Amino acid sequence: EAAVTQSPRNKVTVTGGNVTLSCRQTNSHNYMYWYRQDTGHGLRLIHYSYGAGNLQIGDVPDGYKATRTTQEDFFLLLELASPSQTSLYFCASSVQRSGNTLYFGEGSRLIVV
Amino acid sequence: GEQVEQRPPHLSVREGDSAVITCTYTDPNSYYFFWYKQEPGASLQLLMKVFSSTEINEGQGFTVLLNKKDKRLSLNLTAAHPGDSAAYFCAAVNYGNEKITFGAGTKLTIKP
Image (tube, rainbow over all chains, first blue to last red):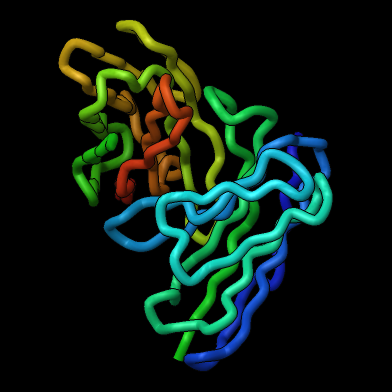
């Protein structure tokens, strides 16, 4: 079974702060994703990657950077956090992009005060 | 782009009753559909998936119906039990750009 691990699970930061969310998957999946989950919006794609060194822009990328350092590791960076980025963030992975099951991590709850 | 409307946002039924969650989508190029379940405080896990056709999939007490003509996807629970209390999300995959669009979710509560 796919394993996707996120850290930290909970984070509080101040406006303008710098935050890095980490994600590791251990099933050799090609694709990794960062989503944010907000009430009334479901999951919205921030960035995704199909391999080490690759980065693709999602639907809500403003204010976020991401980096895929290895096949296993995908990071989401908020360099100047704003209250609008308070959300529940999920990392996911899949073998291929289309028609493939997404395997989600446990989520990282970020609060920007 | 694709828009997926999921209804209702909240649903409460008694144990043993049936429940229906519906998603309507706009893009006829959506060809693959998923239902994910998110238990309280947990991550999303695949419940069921259905490919592009009028198709019925069954499993775990749920039935998924896909009607491409009406661009409607439904998740039907025939006899609810407490373990079904969760949030449910539909998702549609676009054939052209492989984009996945999620519905806003339905929080299902099963009352004893």
